[in-house]
Length: 334
Image 1 (cartoon, rainbow, N blue to C red):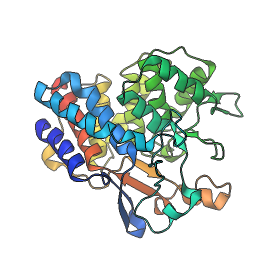
Image 2: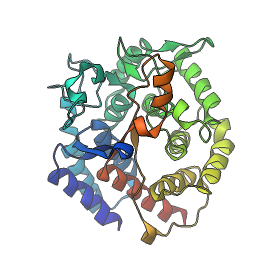
Image 3: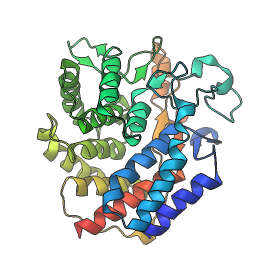
Image 4: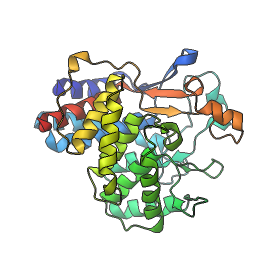
């Protein structure tokens, strides 16, 4: 099954150029194919992490997938050549493709962000010196909170409201820790922020991770970072494991169960294998947008948190990478 899934990722990339993801709003029955880079970069990151545990044949397939994905990256780099990346193409600009309204309005043009930038930089195996330069740049966009903490912000934008998404922060710190870069006050404050927000993963997912917004995705990202690096997050281990087990007792979306099982295995918990004959992708997404969230009006902010006013993203290749990850981890967990 693992061999087939990895082959299907490669086939999907060749068969659907510029249409490797879908954005949709179930409430309004809106669905559009598209080409955001998050779906590609996240897929490649997962596969590269698995690579040392794969057969030579599958490593060759991942080498081919790497070539297909990384050749897309230049189109998403900052339009002025800065070492940051955008969710949508920048050369030329192409936000919300195949739509009728948002692609024509500059208001919905996104700034570059730490999430795509971190995942792309990781998968390009960027040298430490360049990552340090990126870290220095990212520090200049950090936000000083009323608490006195200085936290990395999601966006590399002058006019975009500051925002913290715990999953994006964890991906950014994953990049910095991969190169063991010296920690600054912003790093320590960001870790403190992540410790503070972890307990809200089950009760307030939208408030702490606006672009992921499900307990499954939030807890998966905490586990992914914590299982790889020792850090100030280490004391959270019992809380994250407990939250994952609690969330699993009521989770109905099969793929959310898959990624939470992967997260528990990463946290060195012994788990019974899932019955993959029951597999379903129904209800699963890996990214959300809340177009009304940046507005400073109370009514619009209330709308932003409602699924009817949110945009969801799904990618078959990204989902397959997550399933491949589970297959590899569960085989090692038996």
